[in-house]
Image (cartoon, rainbow, N blue to C red; front, top):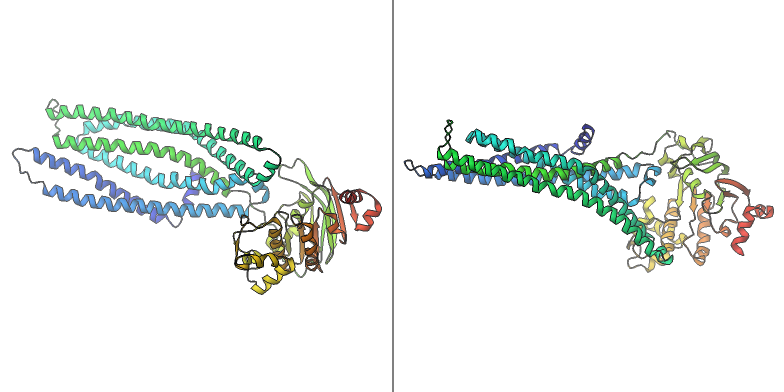
Length: 577
C-alpha cells in the first residue's frame, strides 16, 4: 500500500491505536508462549531418553501448563481486541462515507448509481475491515511466529534452521506473484458487483413498468449479461487465490522431508560438527518446522484478502473524497425575501456538453406566484434545483432582493424555502416524526393542524396508531398519501417561499380538488414557484413562464397567453381536447 493509503487508514484508527498496540502485544506474548511449549517438551523427551540421568520431568510439565494458560489468555485478548478495533474502524469509515454522501454535490452523486454507492458503504467497508484490520493483525501474528520460530530453530540446530530458511521463502514468492496478478481481477470484481446491484435495484424499483411494457425478457437478458461478467471476474480472482495455498503446501512438505532426513543423520552421529542434537531436539525442531510453515500458509491467504481489501479501500476512499458542495456564501439573509429574480441563467450538467438552461430571466416580487410549464425535458425542475442551489449555473445567477443567492450560505438559503417534490420522500419513522421532520420541536397540535390543512388527517386517523403509526416507503401508503404527508410537512414549516415541483402529480383529481383550498392557504401571501403538468392548476398564477428547450419562449398571465394563441395556448388546448 502507498503511504497515502496507509495515512488514511491510520486516521480511521484514531482512538483505537492504543487498543491495537495492546492487541499486537497480546499476540506476541501468546505466540511466544505457544512456541516455548515444544522447546520444553523436547527437553523433557531428552530427559526421558537419558538412560543415566534423572527421569523427573515435573518442572517441564508445570512450565508447559503455565505457558498453555498464558498463551490461551493472551490469544483471547488478541482476538477480542482485534475484533473490537475492526468494528470501530468500520463504524468510523461508514460514518465518513455517509457524511461524504451528505456533503457531496449532486453532480458527484449523479455520476454513481445508487447500487454502487450502497456497495461502497456496506460491502467495501466490511472488506477493508476483514483485509486491512483483521488481516493485518493476522499478518503480524504470522510474522511474529516466523521470527520467533527461526530463533528457536537456530538455537537447536543452525544447519537445519538454515535449510528451512532457504527453502520456505519460495512460497512467499509464489503468493506475491499470484496476488499481484489477482489485484486487477479483484478491482474488476468490485466494479461488476456494483453494476449488478444497481441493475437489480433499478429493475425492482421499476417492476410495474417492466411488467406493463412486457420487458421481462430484456431485463432478464441484461441481468444475465452483467451477472456473467461478474461471474467471470469472480472466477478469475478466486482461481488465482486458490492456486496459492496448494503451492505453498507443496513447498512446506519438501521442507519437512529435508528436516527429517538431515535430522536423522545428526542423531545417528554421521555428522560431527560440534552440535549436540538429540531425539527430543528433533521432535521439537520438527514441530517448529511445521509451525514455521503454517504462518506462510496463513500469510499467503491473508495476502489475497489484503489485495481484495486494498481494492475495496480505494473505492471507499473515492467515496469519502467525493467533491463537496462549494460554500461561497458568507452573508446573512436579513429580513424577508423581498423578491426573487433569475438573470441570464445558463446551466449544463457535469459533462458541460449540452446546456439545459439557456439564458433564463424572470422576476418575482414578494407574495407573487409564478408557474413553470412546458413539455417534459424543457428545464422546469432544473430551474427549481438551481434556485435551491443543488447546482450552480455556469453563467448568470439567481438573486434574493439585491443580493446574489450564491452570497448566502446554502443552509440559510434553503431554510427560507419549503419544497414539495414530485418524488415523495418518507423515512422509516412515525407519521408524527415524518410531518415534523422540518420542524422537530413542533407540538402534536401543530402537526395535526398541518395534516388537516393538507387533507391528510382523514387517512391518518384510519391508521392503527394514528400519528404514532410507523411508516416508510414500503409501508403500504399510496403515492397520493405519501404526497399529502410531504405537503403537510411544508405547511408545518410555514416557509417564506414555496416551491412545488409537480406536487399533485401523484394525487387523483378528486383529492387534488379537495387539496386545492389547502394549497391556496399555504401559498397565500407567500412567494411561490410551481412546476405544473396540469395547466388547470396554474390558471390563477400571477406569472406563467413557458419553457421549451431550456428557454422561456412565452410569459404572462393565463388569459394573456391564451389570447396570444402561441405555444402555451396549444399546450392548454391539447390537455382539454
